[in-house]
Amino acid sequence: MQIRNIGSRREPFVDDWLIDRIRGVELRLHQPTPRNVILRFNKAWEGSTCCYTTAFRDGEVVRLYYRGSDFDPKAGRIRRQVYCYAESKDGIRWKRPDLGLHASDGSKKNNIVWTGEGSHNFAPFKDANPDCKPSERYKALGGSRKRGGLFAFKSKDGIHWDYLRKRPVITEGKFDSQNLAFWDAARGRYADFHRHSGGPEPDAPRRRNIMTCESQDFLHWTEPQWVDFGDAPVEHLYTNAVTPFPGCEHILVGFPKRFVPNRKRNEEDKGGVSDGVFMSSRDGLHWKRWTEAFIRPGLLRDAWFNRNNMPGWGLVLTKADRGDEPELSMYVTEGYYTPRCRLRRYTLRQDGFVSVHAGGSRGEFVTHPLKFEGARLTMNFATSAAGSVRVEIRGKDNKPLPGYGLRDCPPIYGDSLNEQVSWKDGGDVSKLAGKPVRLRFVLEDADLYAVQFREQ
Image 1 (spheres, helix red, strand yellow):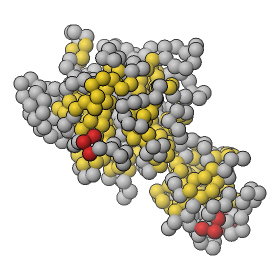
Image 2 (cartoon, rainbow, N blue to C red):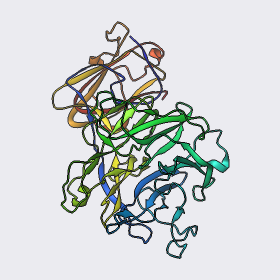
Image 3 (cartoon, helix red, strand yellow):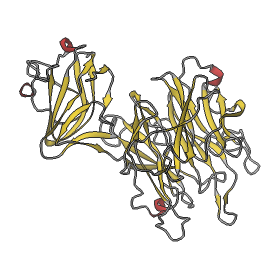
Image 4 (tube, rainbow, N blue to C red):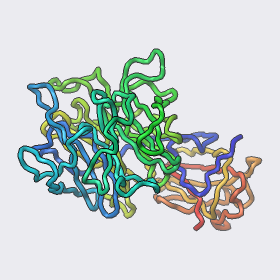
């Protein structure tokens, strides 16, 4: 059996990669909590179809980019499209700076950063490639099939933008979505994820789907491939919002907007409803996609209009609404195609996308053989007042190691992002580092989100 070498990296339970045997527990998807509306798209250059947001922390500032546009119902089309910029110190309260760069209705007093090619779906990021030129520290993709594909852009400050090359760099795709790319440090490449129609299955219906390709220089890209969702059902995935998992960058997570075209909740709507779903991958090509919703429309009537509940690209660490530990914030479009179009913040605990969950009855799981580095085992977990987690370390013969058996581990209860596991003789596991071991977790009314071996 293959040994999982996890070193000292954090391992979240977004899939069953670490799990060998399971009994009485399940992998449970958790939904984020809706919080404050951070922007109402009520400026003259914005409107009812503002979307395709990108957010990331950049030093002391959180940057946000979004499309400013409005739908003309009489003409049946979207009016002029521009790309706008907002910023925040905490990811919670935002402002639109007057940049004075591009005119709208005769005035440059606005927050528009781009009006050229790709202003339908301009998707910026800060380039973490250590070999990146300072003049290209910020990059972006944007474009359309009509114009030949996706163009590459550059900026030294994230505000003033220009072409990296004035011809498309990726040409196979439909592209009428938020198409994105970023420096994938874990694999030493630029990774792209963009929209196309169809799929690899010969009998699959024509549908909105996701392709991926990679590059070493952001200009020359490999032939795009369809991402593989395994046995997940065929569904329309309009966006992808793929990003490295914060703190666990060897894993990629995505938040596609799922489109259900044959449903209609509001009579005056164009038809089709949407929600947000969750997926994860360890190579960018093969994905585990959950079929239950990550973000539901809920009780808001205008969230049941066409093309709503669109998760933006990017996760930001922000101060918790409750509790002492920072939490993850993401930003979701609401009220699309209505005069109330807006962007709402959602929050989730760190590592909190999926947990190994046990209800009131005891359950357990055992990992595959693994090797680790470090001296302490920590876990991100939560229990009820009556619940608990206990941990056993087993040797290569799958038997408990002396001093690390289940009876040696007092019940652990509470709620913590980094709880140290201890046995009767303490929590030092350094003598086991580098040796194949298995971990057995016994849970009762508890959620286990992630584990990590640390030096201290």
